[in-house]
Length: 114
Image (cartoon, rainbow, N blue to C red; front, side, top):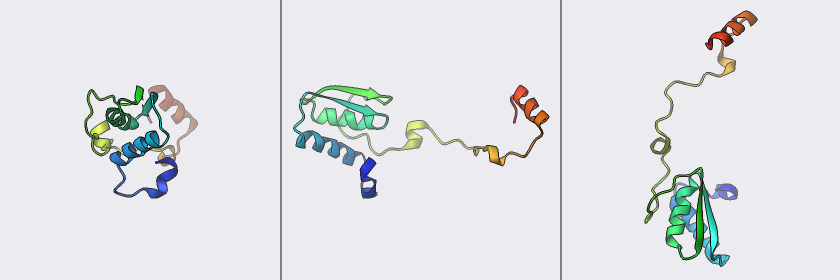
């Protein structure tokens, strides 16, 4: 979303990103270009490349999932589906730890506890 975050609504999704990219290609009359997709945008790049394959010279996936075939958008982003369930144990921040003496901290460092 970047500079368009103020336009975010529940209706903005994968297809919005695809259409935005297709419009950039169309209105800038781009042809024979390299399309890069980073992370989640790899799905967007794949769908765009599928729709205007005659204009795309190469697609580069940077730290992204590269689908074997794309004919439709890969649905909405589901973090649990993409990365698994969130951790169950709450994170323990340093400020939540009890105070300890210097010798206790050294002992924890040696044993890896704490």
